[in-house]
Length: 316
Ligand SMILES: *[C@@H]1O[C@H](CO)[C@@H](O)[C@H](O)[C@H]1NC(C)=O
Ligand SMILES: *[C@@H]1O[C@H](CO)[C@@H](O)[C@H](O)[C@H]1NC(C)=O
Ligand SMILES: *[C@@H]1O[C@H](CO)[C@@H](O)[C@H](O)[C@H]1NC(C)=O
Ligand SMILES: *[C@@H]1O[C@H](CO)[C@@H](O)[C@H](O)[C@H]1NC(C)=O
Ligand SMILES: *[C@@H]1O[C@H](CO)[C@@H](O)[C@H](O)[C@H]1NC(C)=O
Ligand SMILES: *[C@@H]1O[C@H](CO)[C@@H](O)[C@H](O)[C@H]1NC(C)=O
Ligand SMILES: *[C@@H]1O[C@H](CO)[C@@H](O)[C@H](O)[C@H]1NC(C)=O
Ligand SMILES: *[C@@H]1O[C@H](CO)[C@@H](O)[C@H](O)[C@H]1NC(C)=O
Image 1 (cartoon, helix red, strand yellow):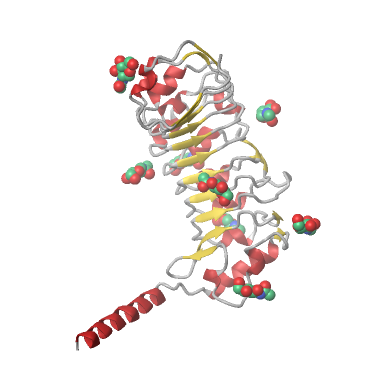
Image 2: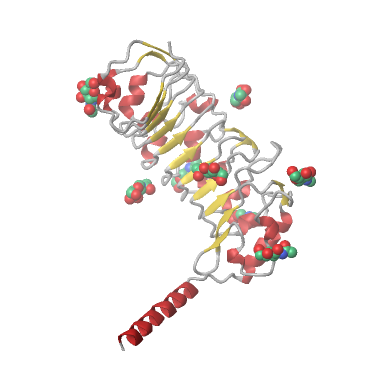
């Protein structure tokens, strides 16, 4: 009797599990499938290196195709096309920009050969929360259309051959109030210093920015006021810029929540300030390849109980 009850109970459990998984099994919408196949057809990619696109075909549920995710109604919301050896076929009128509910787009590690600009059509994808175009071989000015993607929480355009001039960084992020992560490594930002225009734009508008990476961006001289207002930063990477005009003390006192601070090869001068001891959340610090001087009192690190990694190499 007991075992019969148990069996019944288990079978109810199992059937309700099957029922639940079924009801969440997003059915591919025919027009989304057609759009996906159209996109595959337009994209120029090396099919012997592709692992996802190359397998998109009409057999099977399109929401389960590799790199594709749909929402409960069957609209495509995520396209992970990173590392697909794509070398072209993403013009401004590409089918890509007709997935109007797309939230996540990853085109990182593709092969646009430094001959393609970031397409302006990207501005049509107003639901995007995650945009990753890193290491893709894009060239030229970052299009202002990105500044209208006001839902972006994460933007990664690092390691291409890009310029941020018109718009400059402040204009680009002016309305991107939801940003949490911003990766701009290798983007030429020499105009970050032209402070004539928008003084405090970053400050008032990026309250939630916790990660900022600007390695090798051609920064030099004093940094704009707006930068110093990013008080929520937890990860800050500014390696390979000329920060000889920046006081380490200011970096320490303006960003009290830092867990990672990397400033390798930044032409930093002077000594490590005693206020460094206030950065109690610090885990990783890299100050290598600078011209820092002075001694390191043991009190400096006494309160930094989370510290795992400190690199002060090649510092006289
Ligand atoms: C595609 O990749 C393979 C493997 O790397 C390479 O041999 C081939 O030449 C590539 N094809 C094209 C058209 O680039
Ligand atoms: C069609 O897609 C299925 C599932 O991804 C795959 O196993 C099959 O090889 C594909 N067929 C062709 C012709 O690409
Ligand atoms: C992008 O939006 C503009 C204006 O709404 C529209 O004219 C254009 O056709 C759209 N592009 C694509 C590829 O959907
Ligand atoms: C962008 O995509 C690449 C490759 O998938 C990944 O390594 C990188 O971490 C991504 N960037 C962000 C900010 O998630
Ligand atoms: C930001 O939004 C405001 C108000 O909607 C608008 O006037 C301004 O042009 C936008 N800025 C950018 C850079 O898109
Ligand atoms: C910042 O994050 C908090 C907590 O996640 C959220 O409540 C708030 O709306 C965010 N602010 C903006 C401007 O996105
Ligand atoms: C960066 O952009 C500025 C202004 O457009 C230009 O003068 C400079 O040569 C660029 N630097 C690099 C390394 O491309
Ligand atoms: C930071 O450190 C200095 C001296 O090392 C100390 O006087 C100051 O009160 C500290 N500030 C905070 C906010 O802890």
